[in-house]
Each structure stands twice: as structure tokens, then as C-alpha cells.
Length: 389
View 1 (cartoon, rainbow, N blue to C red):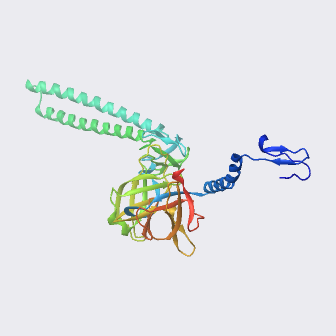
View 2 (cartoon, helix red, strand yellow):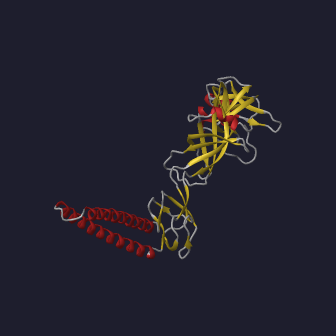
View 3 (cartoon, rainbow, N blue to C red):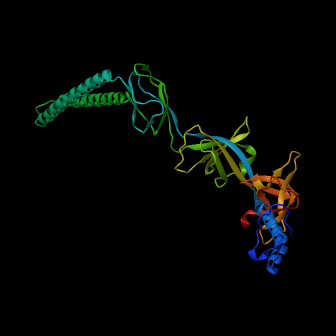
């Protein structure tokens, strides 16, 4: 090799370069260096192939399986409380104090509203005094009757007087009982001037204020139970014969996005809504960690068995086209190096359930289908299987 112009450094072994006295430079190569130079194109080609293989599209795959076919029925419902009460008074009176406000949690027996009790206390005191007086009079009549009986035994007291005293005892005993009952009534009426919570719950509405006059039966607060909440769904009547307490129901709450919960069917109420042609399905969520409140909306999927089996694939394996076609990319000719060829199959789909879709035609059991990375594949394209890395 002859160098033209300014000499440039050569990357080679010192032994491979000779300097001629006349200024010419001669390169002498060993046989080993010559072999390396000859293998250089093949090394570059192999490196290119390896780089190309490293750039292969990675795809996730799953197998076509045979499974029971389930019909998924979407439902929309509401979380409801087992008890909602417009708590009202049984006596009239002036509201003296309200011990709760909207949103307060109360326990059964907690005082909610207190009415003015001054007049009732005075009436009760008068009733108790009358009862004591009647008992004292009864005791006196009984004493006189006992003395009369002793005198009659000695033939010194008329029988008629004894009979009269016995009648007075009966009358006075009845008076005592009547006044005692009146006293108890007054006590009960006084107790009713304090309105207590009938069950555990949350105050939803406050319907009166201190200083207002309430009449018997007038609601003062609305109390909603927050324990034992249930989900109420309206289900089309055609599904009624296929539902029982063992039917699977998956629920998704808008208040807990991204999570699905298994619900327990508690009741199937066989009373149709004649206007909507639906019946009531009541279900329960048994997860104690869920924070639920009445009025929450819920979406559910009722999974009804069809009694038949068929081919199913994951929902992510399907590609839907604007013209209505549905395709699935199938893995073919998988090699030991983790690469394979993919081709698209047109399929006919059936029911969708539990993240899977029924395949009625176009695939066979055991085939591998692409579930991720299938958006831009081409027929006959070589890909790398994700689980082979």
C-alpha cells in the first residue's frame, strides 16, 4: 500500500509495518491477521443478525382453551340500607335541645331530641302523691275491717258492717291500682320527652330545631342504618329461572374504582315490576374493610351458566376492525430460540365473560394467540415471545 499525502497512523501490529529507506512504506501481514481480515465480513453479518433479532417485536401469548361458556349479564344497582326511619315523637311538646346534627353516628339508645319536661314532672309528682294517699286510705280501711272481724267473732259487731268494710277495701284497692297505673303512665310520658335512637346509624336529616313545637307523630330526624348494607339490582325477568343463591355475581363500586368484589346473593324477590319487566336481586358484600355508605352506585356482572363448553381466549387477543371483522394473531413455528412467526386469523366470537371471549370459529384448542403487542403486526412477521426472555 502506498501512502499519498501526509502520512496517517495505521492501526496494526508493529511487526506488520516496514519503512523503506527511499521513503516508501510497505505493510506486511501475518497469516493470522489475514484470516481475521477475511472473517471480518462474516463477523459484521452475524452482529447485524443478532442486532436484528434483538429488535424483534416482543409479544405476550396465551393458549386457546376449552371452558364452560357463561353468559355475563351487566347490571346497575344501588347500595341501600336495611333500615331508614323518620324518627318521630309520641308526645307533643316544645323542643328543648337537639343533641345531634347531620352526619353524626349514633348508637341505639342515644338521646337525639329532648322536649321541655317541666309540666310533666309536676303532673307526675301530683300523681305520685295521689297514689300515696290512696294507699294510706286502703291501709286504714283494711285495719278497720280486721277489727270488725274480731268483734264479729265475739258476737259484738254486726255482720252488715263487716260486709260494708269489705266492700270499702275492694273499692279502695281499685282506686290504688288506678292511681298507680296513672302514675306509671305519667312516668312513661315523661320518658317520651327524650327521643332516643331506635338503632345504630347516621343522622341523614334534621327536621326540627330547638324552640319549635312538635306534635305527636311529627318526624324530627331521619336515621339511616349503615350496618348490613345490601346491593339492590333490577334484573330482566327472562333471567329469573336461572338465578339462585349460588350464582356468581361480581361487583364494581364507583367509590372503589379498579377493583372487583365477589358479592353474595341474599334474596331473589319474585315480584316483577310490571312497567320495566324486571325483578329485584339483593346481594351483600362481606368484605369488612370496605367503607360503604347508602346511596353508592354499583355496576355488576351476573354470570349465568349456559350448560355448554367452547373455545375461549383472553379478551386482549381480539382486534376489532371498523368493517366489523374480528382478528386474532396466532403464533406459528415457534423455535427454541424464543422466536416465532405470526399470522392473523379471522374469527367469529360469541359470549364475553370474566375477561375472556368465546370463539365459535377460526381457532382450534391449544393454539397460541398474541395477547399483548398485537397492534402493529404484519402477516409472516418474526417476533420474540415474551416468556422466552
